[in-house]
Image (cartoon, rainbow, N blue to C red):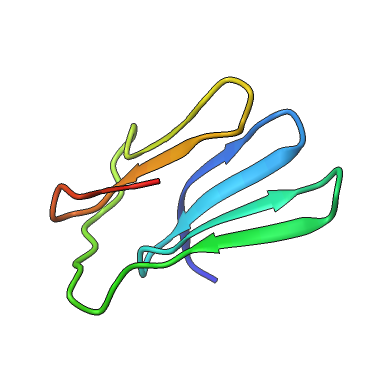
Length: 71
């Protein structure tokens, strides 16, 4: 899997794939979450800061290439 913007929080591994989906893996509960783009949405290169996560890991925001925010 090609990934971009990988971040590791206390118990969560968060990464954005090249295709634009954002995946979160919780190592404590062994659960995986996935956020997907809609058909009409574009995904540009994920630059540094394109994926932001709150300090406690409960909120994640991703900015797509079309300047839409995903959370």
